[in-house]
Length: 243
Image (cartoon, rainbow, N blue to C red; front, side):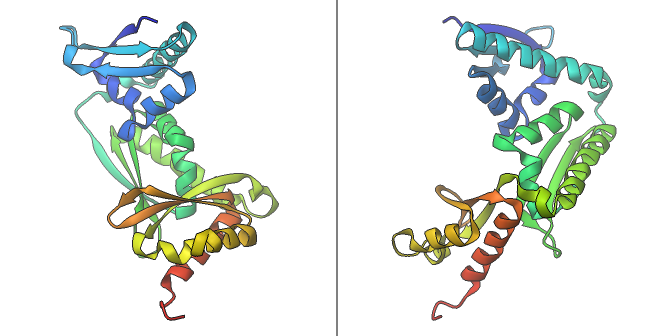
């Protein structure tokens, strides 16, 4: 089917793309369409081509979502926020809240960015002395304040979500020294199976996702079970090899 082309003001491209491409990935996941922003073909009036391909319904859904992002940004003072004044804000959050701030496939971060016009980056590997993770916000000072308030609400809800109400299943990403993976996998995966049974979680070792000598491990389960598993894994890793 032929591609659909939208002409979008260049200043809205960041909202459509999202931090590290999170928003455009979420748009493609939600609509099934393929979306490409062709900044090389910028028109004289400051607009760029957004090329959307897929079925008629997929393209229509993608166009509607992109139009909604632009309209929402305009409603929230997007005109005013294109001012050159930009702010960088650091917010420190509990590691257990990172997954809720990121959302499935980056959907929550993309939503915060679209609502506030900021860029949001969750640095789940960067922690302070209290074990809190860094979230950086960049954009207009008012927009950063809005994004910070949303993130603080998410953290507060996560803190209130104890006991029986905390049984909704979710996921958490942790990073494990690649050389220590054998300690948690065990022979033929025996150790992982044992942990999954004991802690009632699913453990997914992403061997193709490695950064700085560490491998991504995804824990899936209720919040309390995931936190218990994370602590147990770190304990196993810290044990001397001769035990």
